[in-house]
Structure formats: structure tokens, C-alpha cells
Image (cartoon, rainbow, N blue to C red; front, top):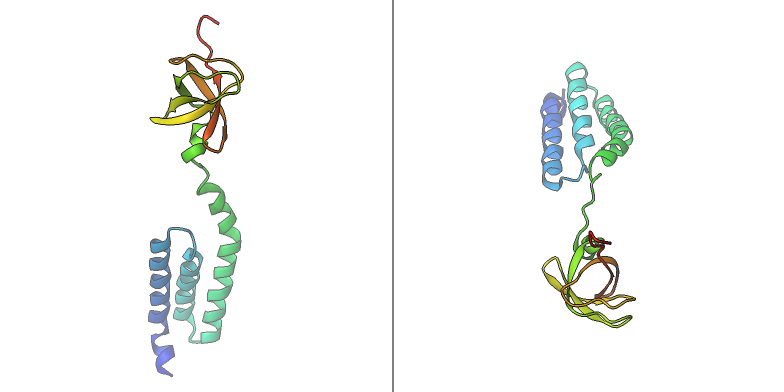
Length: 149
């Protein structure tokens, strides 16, 4: 009996812990499947001293877990994508700071920031508008409907 086969159960526990630590550090479902494979290989090592069977079990279980659970996990994780930066402006209300003449650039305040703005119609300063598009640093706006309209 070699020293490796004598301590192989502890080695599999160490491998499982190592992959679990890597997973905790990455938070991206990169090594959790190998943790599961190492745990199953540990259980197999309690039944047999054959290193080939243990290693084969580790590989097969890891691959099965990867192929079966990764698509499921991918659908449930990152399912909500939050708009950030410019994409968050789409549909947002803004206040006209300097009047906008047809197809000329004016200024609006949206999300606490000043933006160049264009519209196909005249919009006076102080009016509410809605952002409908973004081209570079200029937003396209339309007048916000009032309750009277």
C-alpha cells in the first residue's frame, strides 16, 4: 500500500475544498462542478483503493454535473440585466433647460446630468420630454403628454 493510497481520501477532501474556495473567490460558477466530482470521488475512495476508479469517477461526475446543471444555472443566474449608463436613459423623463428648435440642438436635464437634445418640433425651456433615442452624446426627445391632451 503506497502512501498515496493511504491518504487518498484526505486528498479528495482537499481537492473538494480547493475547488470550493476557487468557486467562492470567482462567484461565476467556474469550479463548483469539480467540487461535486471530488466529493463523489471521496465517497468512492472509502469503498475502493483503486486510484483509476476514483479519478475516473471524479472526471465523469464533474463532466455530467457541468453538462446537466450549467445550462439550468445559467438561466436562473444573471436573468435580470439592469440597464446602466446610457441605456438607462431610454424612456426616461427629462426637463428642457434650453429650448429645442426643430432639428437643432437644445439642452435637457435627465438623471441629474445635462444632455444635448434634438426634436423634430419646437419645445420651450421648462417643458417635460421623454427620451426616445441616443446618438453619441445627443438624446432624441419627444414632448411628454400632459393630462389635458
